[in-house]
Length: 374
Image (cartoon, rainbow, N blue to C red; front, top):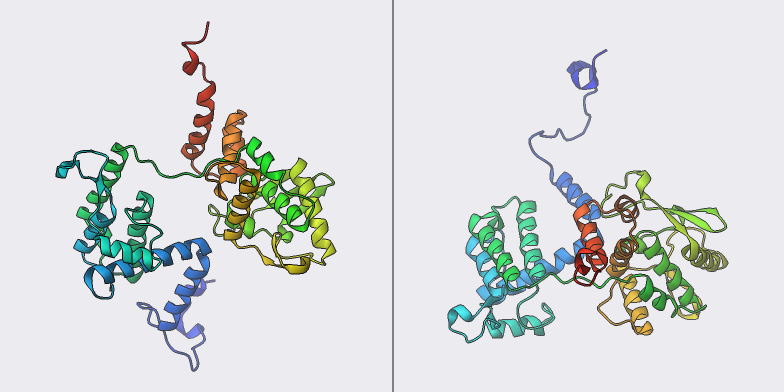
């Protein structure tokens, strides 16, 4: 029996009243459907960051060149963008101190971008922000199938040397502080037995104890994916994550929730059951009168962490990622095995996890204490 694709034309029913497609090109409807699928497959955070970057590009271009941005962007424009936003030492230009940094962005344009909400502050952005905006412009050209200025050797070389210039000055990427066990306990102490207190305690412990879940994963958590094993433990199946965007079923995506985290979850589930909620979002907005609303947004998860840290008087720049960083850092501090830690967090990069491990374990190494050892 022949495969369907190899059957004679006479055996295949002829299309009736249907447009015969050209195999060499997509119809407009198919292109729209493909774009819709790509948008739906992107995370909300990705869409927001891409949109913000492109709005900034349009505003900067209009201010710099007096016209609307159109693709493809010429190579000189990409280079101008880099020198406008990358801080360089003014010492080479006769300044007295190497600490003086300058950019090519005119002061009036800088002020206008801040005044209109495209920038949060005057001056050069963080290197990560600059690199991200170049990457977003590159992606826009790829999707438009237009000549990509960001792939030009001059642009790539300039960006590479800019990275090295920042590294030589000792500039390091900003990282959120790790919310390890001790400060986390202080934060949890701010969660009382109110509706909000029970939710926040369950949320913080769920995010931390299940392996340091990302804020998007916490916001997307559902009752359907939470399985009660016994009176003191649960299993949570992570249906979708940064490293499993296709939602494939994988054993490593089943995370344990035990001990104090399980007890906090049990109390919160009792609240949900009392409100008649048996499916849908696990963590929800709390409205006036104690009514539970829709699922928390990822930004709300961040706000809860920051607010609770402030209430606890925990000093430092903490955010939602501090829960993830705190779990990995604490694992290193307690000499947990690397495979066990990565199984919980879902990290794909050994180097990333080892960075946390080494930062903590180095304080206790014999090599660092040779001068003081007998």
